[in-house]
Amino acid sequence: MELLVAAPALPLDEAGKYVAGAYVVFVVLLVVYLAIMAAKVQRIERELRDVAAIAEEKKGAQAAPGRGSETPLASRGSGGGGTDV
Amino acid sequence: MYGKGLKPLSIATVAMLALSLSLVFFYAPLDADQGFIQKIFYLHVPLAMVALVGFIVGGVFAVLHLRSDDRKWDAYSYVSIHISVIFGVAVLITGAIWAKASWGHWWVWDEPTLVSFLIVFLLYATYYPFRYAIEDRDRQARYASVFAVTAGAFVPLNFMAVRMAQSLVHPRTFATADGGLPGEMMLTFLVSLAAIALLWTTLVKFELTAKSASGQVKRLRRALDAPVGGGGSRIAPEVS
Amino acid sequence: MTPSRAAFAAILAKDLRSELRTLQSLPAMALFSVTTFVIFRFGLDRTSLSGSLAAGVLWATLLFAAVLGINRLFVAEREEGGFDAIRLAPIDRSVLFTAKVAALVVYLLALELVAVPIFAIFFLEDAGGLGPLVLVLVLTDLGLAATGTLISSMAVNSRARDLLVPLVLLPLAIPLMIAATGATEPLLSLGGPSYDRFGTWLMVLGLYDLIFALVGYAVFDFLLED
Figure (cartoon, rainbow over the protein chains, first blue to last red):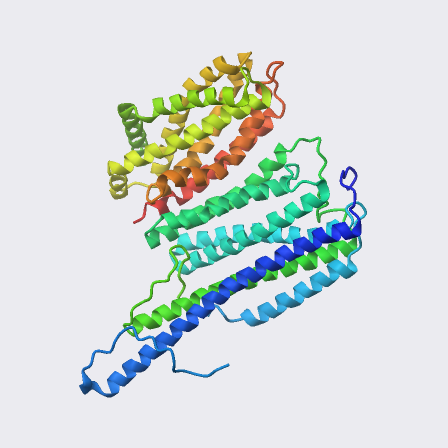
């Protein structure tokens, strides 16, 4: 089947660069994709933190109903929460 | 639960990829004509096959979406197409590298498979601006499914047409995986194919899981009467 | 007549009438084609064409004219509220698809009735291939009409409708172009028309038409839900 191939085989060091290049492209694309997903996951973590803070506030407001204070809706607590590694 | 099974799936993918790479570089014999360059095929061809199947799978999900009106199928369809497009970029770049190494040019019109793939890629690349241009979410999902079905029907037809356009004088220099491959090469190829297919599935599942997590957060926010943050994508369908 | 057929005939007649009444895009498309031919004359620096060059110039021009003209059919419909009337009517909505495709085919054929003879006058030495060319034109128009109707029905509800149709339709039309030029090239060759692989290319065109007519017919219902 490979009868009329016009392309001669490149010497190994030459060819190696191309083959390596192809695999490098593949790896780079994969890693870029993972980096983008990492950013997404970070955003999810941040949002969950916010939501947890909001939930805790609501819980606090429920425990002391007579307060009648308006809980600020967008509380971005930077602290709080676990020291999970 | 989209994340279920993601861990074993990724482990299987990594194992298969490792096995495939080992076979490619330590086991598969050197091709008589192309030499070391031929090793690109173990990457390029599986990527292409999986991408194409992925497009068709996206079309199948689209049909399910149209019939059931369940938005989750739209998400499946979108992600399948999305990952396949990314694989498509890899196919075209590795194809160009192979062309340069074999013919001295970064692109050749002689390879019907590569040219057909380019056309398919160009079509699916329009999927994004197409979705973006339709503002109403429901309509966007429905129209996107129609697009995915039409494009899915297009793929085989396109391959046939391009192949026919090739002058019968040019021999096919692409030593494909069908017929004539010695046993070791065939095994290596099949393992590589399995590895790339697993990779595709893992990435699709991964993406769906991330979308689902986002969706759950939104759900939580709504349940707490908290403001649902902006930051939702205009085109990527939501999953919850 | 069954209700479907009656509806089909009515929509088709309405479309054609509105086109004849507005007289907007048909002359414009014809003009565009002729001007494009002139551009090709200078762009390629040729005063006569044959074979693959002739086929390429002809089909590229027809394709771009078609893509430009396709939106017109639906833009007018939408602005006149035609879509709403159809949605309320108790008929199979896929009939609308068939009617649209038929109207678009008539439209394209009318365009070609003007553009192709002018092309022949401008560039061809020998008009022997024009007869069989009609067959190629009809089959290609069917394919363009099917996918064109499908895409423009969706594009009309979008923001970037002028951009969307060319963007999405062009890749879809590539197999049509491959087959059309494949069949046309030998017809316009220097030594007189030849029928090299003519039947095969016609079959490819027919297959394309069949597949996309079916796909369009099947999914068109989903496009009109609201």
